Image (cartoon, rainbow, N blue to C red; front, top):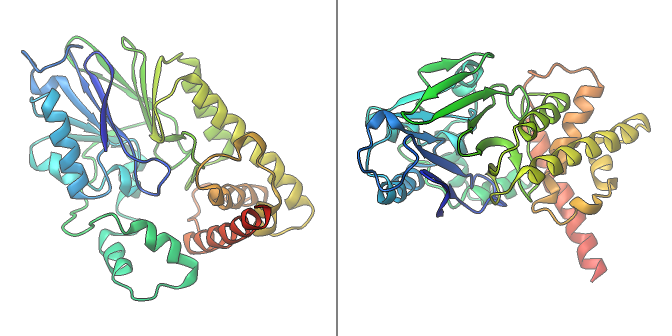
Length: 330
């Protein structure tokens, strides 16, 4: 985990975004300066927490080194656990937690920390989820009390007064998930995207549509941000948003060809040539995007629950195919 300053009074905590669950988050100080002199609690905003309590506490400790004023508010960009399962630590300190209404609606409907503990304790996970279980190994899911946002943002968005600056909450879902929010700090030109942007690593999507996700990326690019903090991967600029837009458009078009030819989702994912996107980490996650494309082409509603077991199984099978190709090539 690394804390980086991305603008005056704005920091990000970055993890290894190429790995499942290792997300990024941010801290925004309202007066635009560093060091905490004269700051009020209401001037300090955190964007997202982490997958477990130890990592979230480490993040808070890193931020306290540059901003000792406890944050009064926390924004969740969406309901996936790697961005919100540490919420309780801020709630216990009295912070207000803010999220889109659909983030709140979905918050308690997903897999639980207790399930993940049980998966970690399995002696021999089924092959279809063995890779997923291995990816969970670095995290400690004990002691987590799911703590959803208590302040809802609707599709009109909201603007938070942080003293000498504001943070705009931009509702852009259902795209990566049902209730995506981006956090835009216009005076600093800094944008926190949540998982609307995966940078240099293959995206995963849950509720939502290709059209909405591509539209969200274009909307964020039109803001002209100087600094973009993605949900996963390194800090970038507008180019990161446009590159992922191009990736999604390309995969959707390729998947449509294979769907029309009657190929299965796994056959399609194995056949798609990724070209300039081929060096992104975790290429086997392409299975998620092909699955989404096929759902849309079959007329499945955007909010019908994703068959996570199937998709993680196909991800594992695709990884085996890609690994075999790499071994054969050299």
